[in-house]
Picture 1 (cartoon, rainbow, N blue to C red):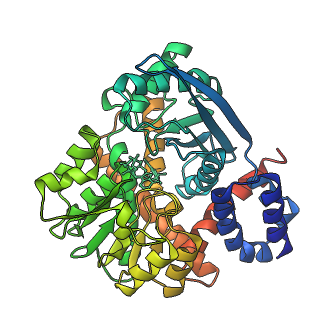
Picture 2 (picture 1 turned 90 degrees about the vertical axis):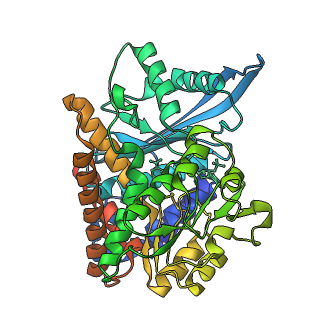
Length: 450
Ligand code: NDP
């Protein structure tokens, strides 16, 4: 279809060197072909030309002083991608690999993810190429204060509400919130993922991981299967991975791996969750230290990973939960997973599987939940935090978790129903992209040309 092809070609020309962003846009737009054939109004209103272009991109300098008194400079970003459904909402990522293309891909994915939650939130994303590794607590605080000194003029509880992502957890949200309050003099719900005694929501920390497991539960239930008794591979060792592992145990599954940027732990007895939390949430150290307590577990350093692949996905299991970062699961990893009998994949991370890997999962017709659907529990619970802030309430953990379960079941139903409607009942990628897009596109048409 020339409409999709021409838009993608123009995009590559007008936004050069943003490979992750093209990967994300190509996946979504390719899925939309049958929708455009059925309904010409999206073309008539130039919706895809408009939807691939952020409403606003803010780039700024962050200057801060390290413990030795040196002046350091980083790049800061906030992409306010689409506000058709509500205020921009999406996390902040602090990682040395961050570029404007990374933030654009994440912001683009966020538009459709947020639409799938059924909640009134638009799509945005932000971050910096700042590397939190090896920084002292004071350095993290000074960096966060410098970052917010610029960002505060662009955000607000009714316009743009950032949250955490890689490298931004409760500690960073605290420092960012403190600086926002100091600069504006306002105590308001401008960030989510806040501390529990100053406006945070019970269940927010756990929500992305728990949600990815609930999504897997829904996919399996549709195939008359369950997680109970299944051996699971999990990548990552951060917020999403830890609470994926926690919920897998609660549902009777056995997670046997986790990984970080230096290597993978394979513990056939099941990952020691308390130890993992201690290493990553408290000590913030490398996973290799896991072996001090469990010498019988295996540690595979990234130096020993297979060529073009990731050691996590080469271990035999029934289900897989990629929870670290984008493109961490390649075509050869996907082949290995399928050969080893994996029948369920639920993505806690954003775009963790390469395009070629996704094609293999779809061809095999396994239960495959793409990140924009499977990890939407985090942003959904962020919106529940916003609702609590604006009504000055604090809900119980049971109430938040019940809502999260309902939201994940509803997202799965929308994806499955839409996939069925377009004649590909097992293709939840198609279902997620069309269902999310339709909501945003219809709102854009109703709101006129803006
Ligand atoms: P964290 O910073 O808490 O953890 C990230 C984990 O992934 C760490 O273990 C980190 O290793 C590892 N990692 C990061 N980058 C790389 C890399 N390039 N190569 C190998 N390992 C890497 O982040 P989150 O758990 O919050 O986020 C994980 C994923 O989930 C991301 O894709 C994020 O966008 C997505 N997500 C997060 C949500 C949330 O609510 N937090 C919501 C929805 C999606 P190390 O410990 O060595 O740094």
